[in-house]
Length: 297
Image 1: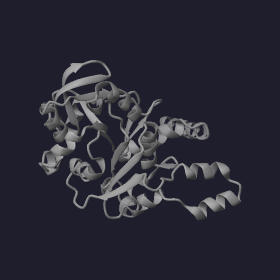
Image 2 (image 1 turned 180 degrees about the vertical axis):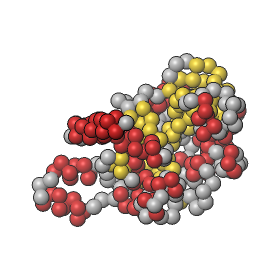
Image 3 (image 1 turned 90 degrees about the vertical axis):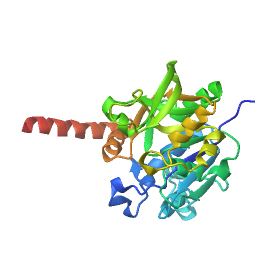
């Protein structure tokens, strides 16, 4: 019997130190990309892939994130009174029904693997997705929906993957390729943040995963890896060593690293230019800036 993916874990416990001082009081995940928080893009992608249960791994100071998904009766009533039905529909799309969302605390910053392990009792014995909201992916078909289709074919662990420059492999989990089948790649290993010049390929893992319960069992060992943290890639590779298949999936779309300031700004410009209501004004501004800089040179 083929398994369905209905649960997703969202690790959002990080402090967001690269965005200080903004993240002193505002969780990074609800910083806005154009006019939607980062986490809303992740939720919308998960819903499009058929996810029904949303599990957030949080930490102290993330109350605003939890409030974001709650109902706002006073605001809804005010929009309804003023006849602003379009804004009311947008607001309703951010609500999460009771029982649809759960929040778990990660009390110590022990790594991504530990964050996923924190959700083990809510996952039980079924495959699940992991989405890192920092990785925002612009795609005609949402990335996780593409991966769910691939999982229906393979029924194995799947990690989203993309080629990166050789100089950048030391910053990612890197796949050791067994067979390249195009969009799907079978693997014979994974290396977390390999030393310069030692990467087995330039195919890097980014923030989308579909994993089997075996990975949670491997995380039970709480074995520290690169950086002294419990690495999710180590647990995935341990599941492979036990006989489970692990696949890399080359998704269709453009990934933005919104965990960095440069990536966040690039995503802001790209998503704004994709909007009919913003494109012309923003493009005219960018053109004027480029023209002025060229003239100054």
